[in-house]
Image 1: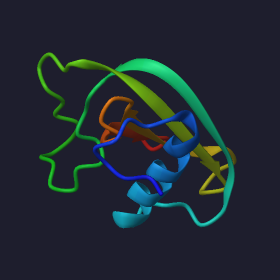
Image 2: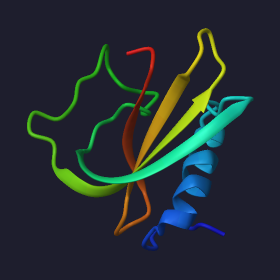
Image 3: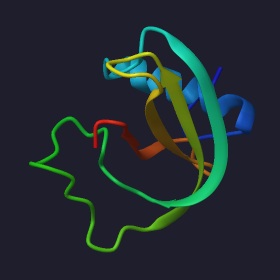
Amino acid sequence: GATAGEAASKESAEAIAREFLSSIGELPEKIASAKIERYWVPANNFWDKNKEQGQKAAEDPPYRDCWVVTFYYDGLHQQAWKTVFIDITSGSVIGGADCRY
């Protein structure tokens, strides 16, 4: 299983992202496909449920080497998507995005 605190492999990234979205009630019911890519991305607090109004990202967010896991699903429109950023070194979720923003 995928545990936080361990380096994340490309294979484990999708499972970590699914578990994470599921834990916050954001996992789409019918996922059509998943795409996993490696990018340097800025950490954000997108999935933080206690966030203040809007996307108050850090002034100068740190860029981290991440697995960017995108789930495509049939939502309100075709090709709706949700993305989770997973820090490769720690295996923890450091942000993401979805198609509503």
